[in-house]
Length: 201
Image (cartoon, rainbow, N blue to C red; front, side, top):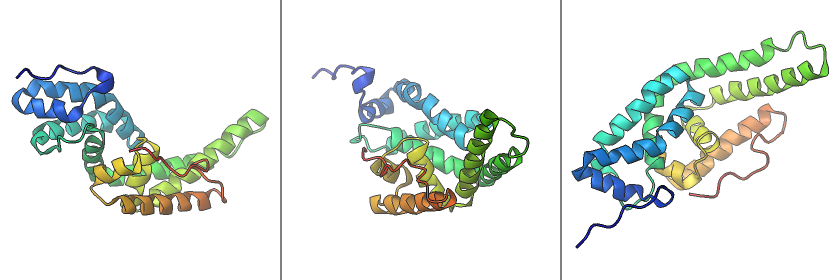
């Protein structure tokens, strides 16, 4: 029986690609090509560009080594890769908290010297970002991971549940609590723009 034809990038089935990579390791390059830039961007936004270089590369190194454990019935490797990246980011918790605290101070430090409307508007935006960064930095690791996987990575709740290997309900609860803390920090303004969170995934 002939092997099924390769599918185009718009309909790529990651489970099939990874299963084939068990026998043809070079096929894993398709997963790397499809997701490396996205994972790198996510890590850079949580930490910094230098850390992203190392952690994104390590994410795919770990994924390649563990590819035999991937559930090939799943058609997307995206949540799995974000889960690996999140575990690697966990080793840099202190650096992430320092960065968020620094961003929080930045909003306050720029509050002086705004004389025209444009600068005042910029200072106001920086203060909001500063408050958000400060509150995100104060969240528990578990709540911060869920929040940032939804907000920065754009994962749906089901994808976050897969990525972190926790129940769907736990994701909903953690996201709701994190969102509430952010809303309180902004004086009742919903930082999620009154969206109830992603419904995809």
